[in-house]
Every structure is written in structure tokens, then in C-alpha cells.
View 1 (cartoon, rainbow, N blue to C red):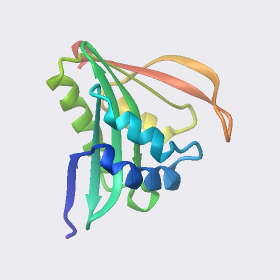
View 2 (view 1 turned 135 degrees about the vertical axis):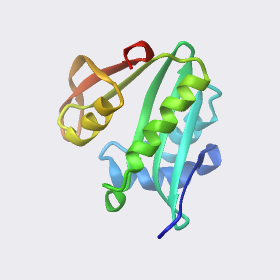
View 3 (view 1 turned 90 degrees about the horizontal axis):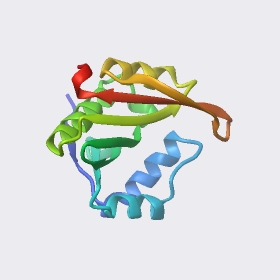
Length: 150
């Protein structure tokens, strides 16, 4: 069985994350944008590696008592292995550690797999931003998690 490692990411990982972003998203963040985001003291990021290859990641921003999931992704070739769940569990654990009991995220309204994952972890619908995503155009579903709703 191949070993997977989940570890904290830093600005020095921006290149690997940019390559992964390009493989996952049509609106991929640039290496410069990722580096700047990862350098923020309010940001926590995690990399998931399999056999030394970066296959998933999560970037979140925390300012107690709130946090926001900024990016999460798993390379298409590595999906359906529970990696999204591992990243979400790390996100929630870090939120608790930082004193954040209310968390937010936005997701393409047509991304049923991601929405299902977020709901499994207690996120509830909290609004819609019409036409938010481009290339292709889609609404953003806003979701919220409150620790008291566990």
C-alpha cells in the first residue's frame, strides 16, 4: 500500500500547489497568488502527498472566532480515496485549535461531489452568489458551519 502524508504547507510549496491548481481548476490561482496567500499569518495550508507526489491540498484563513475555507482540491487521478475527507478533518481540527467555531466556504453550485462532502461535515447552505464563477459561468453556493450545530 502506498503511504500518504498530510503535512503543513508553506510559501515554498507554491509551485507544487500551482501545478495542482492547474490540473484541477479552470480558474487556477497563480504561483504568485498562492505564495502570497500562504505567507499570511492568518492562513493555514495543508498538502497531501502520495508516493512523494502532491495530490491534494487545502488552504484556509482563520481569524477567531471565524474561519474560511479558501481552496481545497484533489487531483482527478487520486479522487475517491478519502483524501477530501482527510483534508476536511484537518481543516476542522485547525479551526478548533485556533478558536474558530463558525466557518464559511463557497462552492460551485454544480459541484455535487464537493457539496456532498461539505454537508457530511456539517456545513449548511447559507446563500447564493449568482453568476459568481466564470469559465464556465456558475452560481456560488455559500455554506456555513457552526460548532454548536454539530
